[in-house]
Length: 535
Image 1: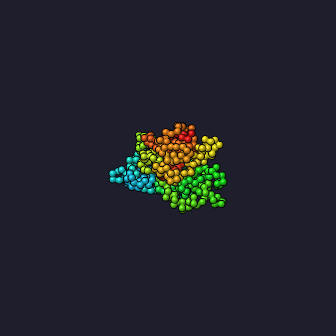
Image 2: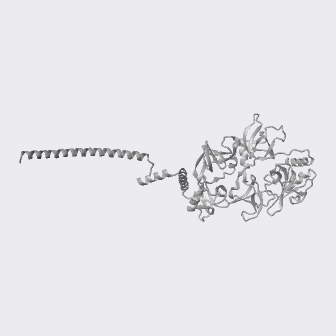
Image 3: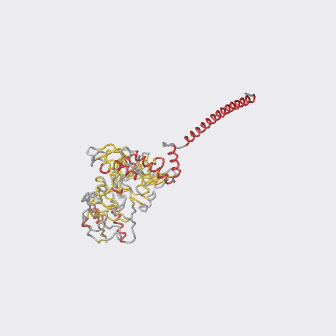
């Protein structure tokens, strides 16, 4: 082989060795660079995972969810959040029950129709069903922080309950304090307190702003409520304590008749500044005390004014609380005008009178959906009003001040005489009711009262309301004047009660053993007849 060929072979071998070395070097560079790139990608993935919302789905599902979420409008987002809140509210119950009534369902201490009523479950409210009696007629429930029994026929369960619950879950304020004032305005002022909410009670929220929550009943401080989507729950009837808890600084009238409520802290104006009457054992809140300590500024019912602070007339502090606990009674408080009174606890029964808003009536018996009340002493007891549609509130209550302005004697002789008759009748307010009685001081019945008052002015009437209704002449409600007599009928349409009109839309009458001679609104019951027996 020639020398030239040897040289060529040597060069070829050298080139192959050089290419091999370069290839290995490039592979090492690629390996190192690839490793660095992998590390960078892992770091980026970790950072993204830490900042991305958690998802149980695959990467593809997560990306899809993020795209869908970004596409939702604020309204759709709010609706989605509410739907989630509704489901959470329903799932908070292990065995959900929903009250299916238009008013409220009584919660009783024992599983019996005559069991003591300890609370009420409004229609659409939720409860936890703990157990059911063997015959299936009663559910043992927990709701509103206490336990009791409800009739099972008025309670939805299972899927029906869950479906009904979806319509009743709303944003509500749950009271966390023992007692919370409900105010007419979002301002702390003793004069604007209109009621009290108790612990665990729930109220539908209208708005939230500046530390206040507006509910359907008024305003409450946001510091003492928890606002969330939830079902309404039961409210406990803590007997007489509920009546006392309505007042922040309670006072109770100790007089046997009525105590004047005045527009200013003075008696120098005589009767001119009298704006109301505080009945015997009536309650109110003390707003302030005069500098000389002789007057209390009070709020009782819808009346704000001044009463004497003399301890022989007014009880305060523990004395007032003790009196209130003793005197509070179960009352039906009418919340609408024209509430129908029926002869039986049925919407098919006869309507025989109508009641006015804010009137209070003693409760004789409570039934699911109905309450039997006492109207007047002469009634036979067949007076029933429906508790459905939230038209009446049944609770322990105390009497409160009533609006009253005494009549001024006019120059006109006729008006002056009528004013004298009315003012004479009013001096016996608070005296006792006695069936068949004729003593204005020791006791009278309704017709005995009107008979003896008018007898003092030379007007003779028989001692029977039905007979008095035939005396004088008939007048309309637009024509009636102070001193005219207003007659009311029982369920059969027979006149069985009489009162005297005193002006300003009010009457004075001997009502019952419970209340004695009292002042009421003239149409507290639907009048049967009005008679002028004076002229």
